Length: 106
Ligand SMILES: [Zn+2]
Image 1 (tube, rainbow, N blue to C red):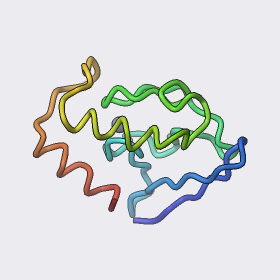
Image 2 (cartoon, rainbow, N blue to C red; image 1 turned 30 degrees about the vertical axis):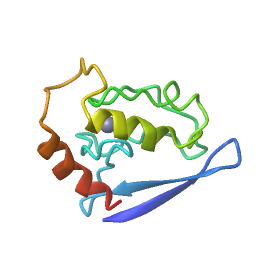
Image 3 (cartoon, helix red, strand yellow; image 1 turned 180 degrees about the horizontal axis):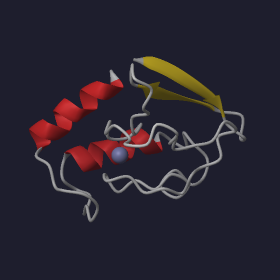
Image 4 (cartoon, protein in one colour; image 1 turned 135 degrees about the vertical axis):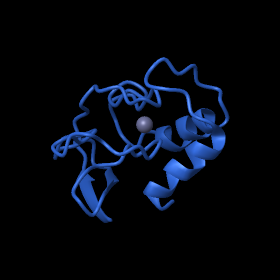
C-alpha cells in the first residue's frame, strides 16, 4: 500500500491509496480498481466523472472540487449505512463494506 498525493486545481490536497501491485482504491468505498491506469482524479485534481460501484461520481458528488466539505466521508457514511440507492455493481452487506473499507486504512 502506498499513498498518492494530488494537489488539486482548487488548491486542496487529496490522498489516494494505491495497492502494493499498483491499483487505485476508490477513496470513498475502498473497492480496488480493475484498471491499473485508473485514478478518480488526474494529476491536477480534475475529476474523471467516473461513477464507482458505490455510486459516487467523481466530479459530481464532490462538486468537482475534492475534498469539498468532506464529500467522500459523508457519502461513505451513507453508503455504509445503506442510505444510497446503489445501481452499480452488486449489492454487498455492511460487513462486506467494512471489510472493503480496510483497503483505505482509515
Ligand atoms: Zn467507490
